[in-house]
Image 1: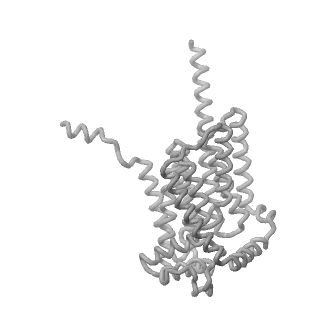
Image 2 (image 1 turned 135 degrees about the vertical axis):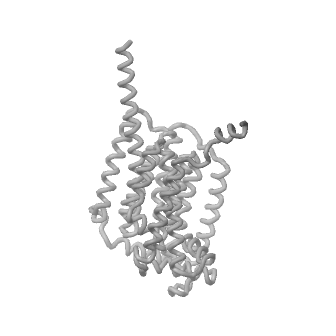
Image 3 (image 1 turned 180 degrees about the horizontal axis):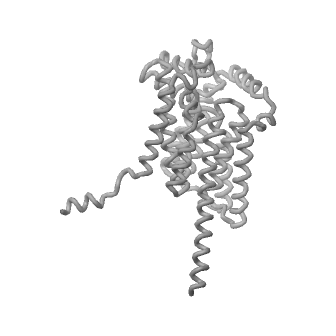
Length: 354
C-alpha cells in the first residue's frame, strides 16, 4: 500500500502543456517534411549557402572553390556554413539532409517558443494561442530553406527563455553571438542590451552573473576573436563583399520598404506597445521584473530589421515571429487588466454587503 501511495503522489515529469509544445514541434516537422522539396523549390539563393557548407563537409575548408570563392566568402559570417556543413558530414551530402536539418531546427525552435510563451504569459491558453500563431506558411517556408533563418529562429527562442529565467547576461551574449550566423539580430542585440542597461541603472542594481552567463560569454567572445582574425587576414576581400551587400541593399528607398503590409504590421505593433508602455510609466511599473518592455523591444526590433532588410526570406520574422511575440505580451497585459478590474468589482461588492 505504501508503494501505491508514493506512486500516486509523484508529480508528472511532463505535463499537458509540455506535451502540447512537443506536439506543435512535431506537426511543424511533419508539414515541412511533406513539402521538403516543393515549398519552396531549390533555388540559386539557397545554393549560395548550401554549396559552401557542402565544401566544408567534403574538404573542411571555408574557401569554397565550388562557387568560385577560393579565398572565402565574407558577405555572410561562417557560423551557418559550419552548422550545415557539420550536419552534411555526419548524415550525408545532399540537399535533403541540409533541408531536414533546418526542419528539425525550426521544429525545436517551435517547442522552445511554446515554453517561452507559457512562461511569459503565465497562462497555458495564451501560450497555446501564441504557439499556434507561429504555425504559418512562412514558418514552413523558412524550415525548408537552407538559409540562416531556421537557426536564427531557434537561437531567438533560446534567448527569450534565458531572459525569462533571469539569465539576462547570457541572453544578451547569445543575441550578439547570433551575428556569427547572420547580422539580422544585431539591432535586437543592441536594443536588448540598451534597455536592460537602462533598467538596471535606474534601479541602481547590478545583474546577477552566474556560471552559464560566464560560459556563454567566454565561448562567444572566443568565436568573435577567431572570426575577426579571419576577417583581418582577408580585409580587402571583406570590404569588397560588404560594399556589394550595401549597394544591393540601397536599391530600394527606405520609405518604400515601410509602405508594404509588413510596414503596416510594424506600425500597428508599435502603437499597441506604446500604449501599454505609457500606462506602465504612469503607474511607475517600468522595472527590471516587468518583462513587457524588454520583450516588446525584442519583438519590435525584429520586425523593424526584417522590414528594413527587404528580403523575401525575412518576411518570416516580420509577418510571423515578431508579431507573435507582441501578441503574447499584449494578451498577457490584457488578461492582467481584466483580472485587476474583476478584483476591484468584487471588492466593491464586498464593501456594499458589509
